[in-house]
Length: 115
Length: 111
Image (cartoon, rainbow over all chains, first blue to last red; front, side, top):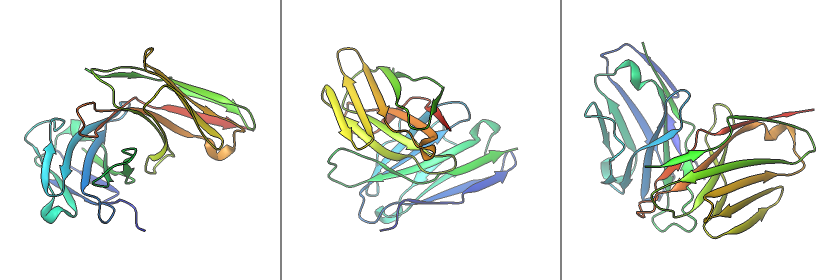
């Protein structure tokens, strides 16, 4: 079974440009999460989808960030326009609709560098 | 707010036992997780505690005391491959299943 996959693994852009990160969760997982780790800090929650609906987006930093999950399958996270402080590693995680322990399955992350 | 503390770095010898502590102060509690993350890889699930006590799984054990806001991860018979970051995370008590992470403890196992 394929795990959570993220693309790209690394993106380098200039301030003011746009970047779109993609996450493919484990097949059949209703829950999809985005997290971010800024250098030297802890991994922080951004938002949570249940199927195609945003369950909680309280962690989104500002309106330059837009997340979508078309058809309840893969998700995209767009940053427009990117700022220097957006640099970090963006993790996606998924979990089944009926959690047992509530374990989240993480992808390897997309590293974003804004110059 | 949520505050989760763990040591930044630890070093231990191959074959030894190491204990990584985690203290938390959160507005609620709905379970504590430990994840392992090797550099450049995805965090992977190690353990889950929701009730007080010790959960053992092979060489790894995790302990929880809810009254003290305290957990530890115990690694026995350390191997070189155990060199990684260990992340303590508390689950959002509102039921949304989100996790609040500590900054992680980078463990280096030396020969």
